[in-house]
Image 1: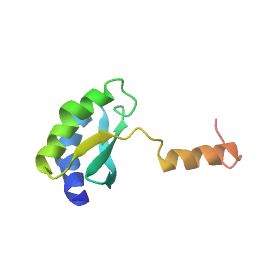
Image 2: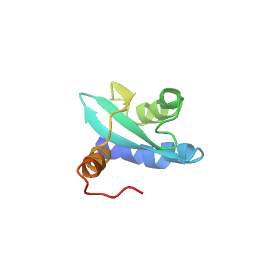
Image 3: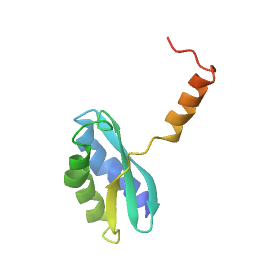
Length: 95
């Protein structure tokens, strides 16, 4: 089911979000709930939750009716945490 969700995001959701300089990714699938992270300009948009409800959820639930829910993942990515650790440890120069 993960690949099906990724396909729906890539083919249906991302073209809509790209109009606003954003995108989406599946961060995890757990107990029938798909956790979706918005990327680009959509990641910090004040309307992110509305976008999830009105765009993302409709496409994903429509293509995968066996899902229980689709929720917005607002957690901090591992990549961002790794970069912050490198900066704090002095391993990366910040201009």
